[in-house]
Image 1 (cartoon, one colour):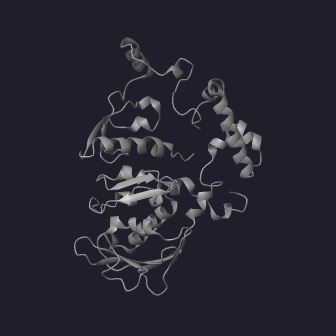
Image 2 (cartoon, rainbow, N blue to C red; image 1 turned 45 degrees about the horizontal axis):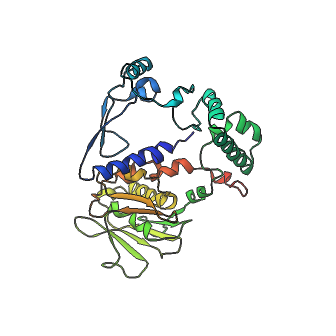
Length: 328
């Protein structure tokens, strides 16, 4: 129900390719083959759009108003190669196990990709058993698995539960208890707000300040020891993005969410128009998330773009009362 695959597998890879190929360019022109008849959502697309999932890309859709017949007549008349799956009977060629596929596509997949198909069914059956589904057979065979949404049954969903409480002594401060202990990654995520400084104003080794870019005056104070889970964030200057305390609280929570949930999906890097964000996994599959302080202009697009601050917040969100022992 909540699809994340395009952002992670498609858009993320395309973004990396664009950045590697056109790193010196501020914008690139991209020609795409989407058409209005493909879906209700695409029926609303514009022929030329700068509102792309990829920050520096302008998308042009030259065949937006073509019908299926137009496409096939063009392919045949020009003798263009096309995917062999169409010859096998598939009307749409994409991920063979996509939950949006038709029953006909599933039937063809069971024939042409029998080993993969059986392996995927075992994954579905194991998940149904793990999450105590009432009717395991129906969940798999009748396609009830396609309705699944949220993080129930996924271990990392526990990271969505960040304990938050306002400070009773200072309305400009917020206290967090984090599932994931504080490390350098947390401070990196505050670069969009300003300059990271742990020397000029700090009175102890557990304080890090965020300075306003222009004045270099303290804007935020983060107080918490690395390796521990208690964090206090204080708004020291009501200016810029923090004029409105409610907005300040929201933006801070967004970055805390990102710190807890980041799986290296590259969604933030796709949004950034200034090529300031790079994300990859190291040899041990740990997320390496970098924000280039020299490139970052503080536009906060990477902070505000996704609901909850992080793309994974939407994907993994579940109710606390549903996160029971044995459900993961």
